Image (cartoon, rainbow, N blue to C red):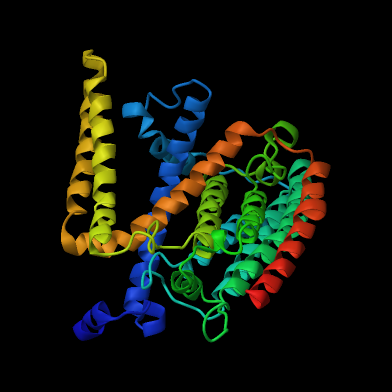
Length: 416
């Protein structure tokens, strides 16, 4: 048994490809825990960033700078009364949030955080990703129908029309990226998520810059479609708080509502991970070919540790600026302790074995974090579209643009 566990440590493949179910299970647990922590962090960051964009403070009361606010919200949702409408379909009403959560988490089975940091590497990884992610619309429709209420049903109908419309443009953009993988020596492409990153590495260019501006336009189409697919502003018509109260999950409360919340943010991270994998080089660091060599590798390997030390320094600066009143003593100590944890993580990332092992995951996570910041920026910038405008963008703008980019990418691949 011990040999079975330790034998994978020297493997250069994913646990699923190596057939090691123990490490596949470990990766699944790590992804689940990491996603849960990321959702908590994203909840706090979104509220704070939007507040600063609007010259406000955001959460400040629960914990230092409101750091414990997401945990307080989670506890509130867990102990809140769970209400089901009297005329609702109990089974479908109960299954709907589980369907949405399962689909948003299942996508991460094929998301590669590094050449070996994935649950498994499927040779149909892109098709698996598109197929599983499209199932989330079923959970939304089930929630709206099972609630037996007008507003949830309207939100569900909006969602089904919106998701189906934008999935077409998203699929065309993905096929454009897949076409680019075939431009290698043997002329064969790949649908493997790891293979797509390796194709960018062998061609020495991120696909966002491939056949410029075709790669950039394909990435733009995917970026717009992924905002619509995750029901985020300015395309949050299925929820539309000012029109439909909360849309398809109006009748949900407590823990079941929190599952929709968890699924939404997990889906945001999932589609951001897919965009990073297909167009932004996945786990590759910036300028891997232009700035190559042992010296540059060492310089970039120090960035993770320096990043955490910088965050620790900012935390200590905020600690020093906390009011000296006795009422703020606990918050000051808590913020200082949080800074100390960040500093310890930063120091640990300078240790050579840790530094070398964490590189891929850090750069992948940094690119995903940038995409998540763009989600927040969109929400604080653009007003909500009308539904007719939303459908017009999907069918009359993105669809023709996606077809054109796909055709031109194929032509460019043949010619160049």
